[in-house]
Image (cartoon, rainbow, N blue to C red):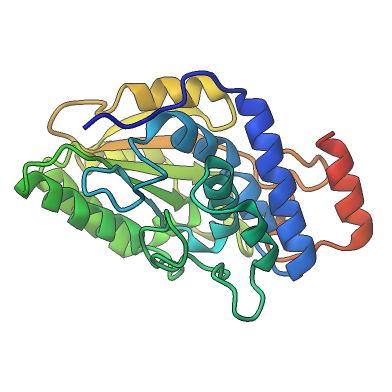
Length: 274
């Protein structure tokens, strides 16, 4: 089935628009996880505006590529990208985390078109992705399953169980992405539970691995164009990112995992995106 894809786009402008909407959502809702959202904007922009085989008019088409945001606390970034892509009216973003909203603070399946899975408890997304990917193989379908995980999430044993399962079943239609910003809720990953050598660990579990700058659009697009990285193996993309990316006073700052956005910071942040 041929899906509509955008061939020409300005990723910089798309990402700026998405970041503006994320800032607005957090300022109006006074909720946390802003830094975690800003680190994945560029990856999501390339996925939804270039890579994924999707049709916004048929969000549940059985042949669509699936995307699971395993780090469900960053769902505001996904909402902003989905609305930018046309899955639902952008005005719905104004209801983020408010009473009666379709946009809760963690990913909730089918709350709006484009949300494929309920996530939030970390370490579950890759298992769901592996299950969907093996179903595709058994049903002789060609869709792919993308799972975006946090780096802190890679401390979960369930991630590695899913990694072994995917490798054993040769799920080359499964693509894991690690948002490697090296900060988690309470400190740097190398201080909480060291992940390195992260690439070697995934290789040892039978995946093929690429490592990129997760804010370089050319590197992101090029990596996704090479999927699967090796036939009969699941693919893992380590995307080196910066928490709070795009707003200078938030970049690589732990406090923006939970800190609320006040009026002064909101105006200052918006000015940086002009």
